[in-house]
Image 1 (cartoon, rainbow over the protein chains, first blue to last red):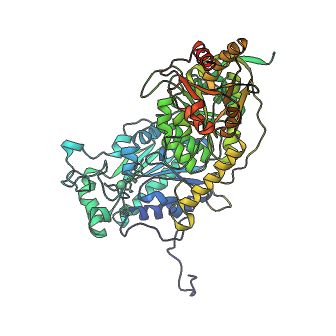
Image 2: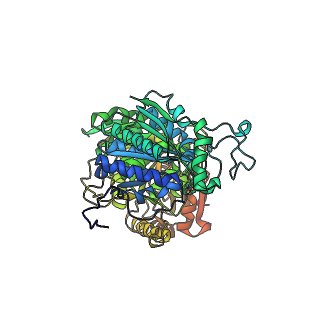
Length: 251
Length: 350
Ligand SMILES: Cc1ncc(C[n+]2csc(CCOP(=O)(O)OP(=O)(O)O)c2C)c(N)n1
Ligand code: SF4
Ligand SMILES: [Mg+2]
């Protein structure tokens, strides 16, 4: 892929920290987009040699195969605890906990709240796709009201299973976090905003400021049962009004 | 005698862990082991270590997972209901081939049970409650000295085999004060090239129990673990024999039950009854061969436990002669009574 002509110049390339292998993600999935911008940020900050990433249980369970940094598994919901153990040993390393909505707001709610409350000097990337992707599309804590999933075949009934939980707002009740932002990746503008938020989250960590929480409204065309294009629209039209985009805290 | 100090069993475990080079300890409070977190909270900052009270036992064991993956010596401690919650993490630690030390000061169960000492979690410790074909190396000390010595050894064994090692005590042992001599660090140094330290100058390291791809078959991974377990079974069995050379009646007991059995044996010997003690110090690997050899010369093998019969299943597997087997156990935080052991053994004489 060497440019042969002097008239050509590279304006775009695969980020160095993104491993050159096909991912297992479905077309239109938000995980792949966020992996790529995360790799770009790692390159831009020059922290490939200093980063340890914790993969969740969920569709992004193989995250450590895609980002060219040291990687660690965590049981479903326990990534914040594993990240805490790693960070307490390697205070000078950049530790990232990457989690889905089932992982972070259902089975791992306790760990998620307490890692934020301790102000652990790590960065959380929270992928909210309003569904359990990996297990085939069951209700997530973030599933929208009336949304049909495998386990809400008549739509999410909020009088029965409650309302979708807003991660950023929850974390925003705590004193310790230094950075909380909700982003989306349904178009280029928002992808770039998400990238800036992730970069800020990692910079905060490098500067020793404390805990950063970045929520990303993400697409799961496969389990939503709609096309990638429609999925992007669905985030904008259905999720975004309930999950307000923007910064909640930047200390 | 001058180098002896007095400490509770729980505190001795804490100090021994520090001597062994453990600088990371994560736990959630539960009686009867609360002296361990209290001791570590005070001592670890003095030696530049990290004490962190976790939000649950789930979190604590997974913090241990992270610290161990980072290459550090890490420990958690708890008691029975808390160990139940740690099982998931223990399975992941075993699957990811990480070393760590877990202390369990058993209490009465099931459920919330009570806070007195118990041995009703032998199954939980040796058979595990986590999923998969894995093992935990389980050491069952019977004195404060042994708690301390074995804690130091546990860290070496964990590093040597990259396996979770459990110190299995009980509430009585943890709460008991005894004079003991502080153990010395072993001085052994284990390289951890797999540790997550940032991939500077190398390919990334990955710590995971998951094996999905055909080249990386889960069965192959399990067979590798099995090989380690076989090595441990061949090399790390520990037990103590007391007056077994001429014993016609063998009492098998570990931990606190072994202490009581020992005093019963002293009485029985005064009466001229040839009783002796076989005390497994490792519960996994279990000293099957050694116990079998001893039992072949014996008329009766009495297992004494603070449970209604858990280790006795391993004794049966070792002895392979049901006619020789007898059992005496108390449960729910009650101690076996020496007189009852004596009465039972006397009755074997006819
Ligand atoms: C203890 C445990 N319970 C359940 C599962 C099954 N499981 C795997 S992934 C998952 C849900 C993941 O959903 P989410 O966190 O939203 O991630 P996504 O796949 O949507 O990215 C579940 C329930 C598991 N692996 N472990
Ligand atoms: S199932 Fe959904 S979350 Fe999982 S890879 Fe496919 S689109 Fe992405
Ligand atoms: Mg999800």
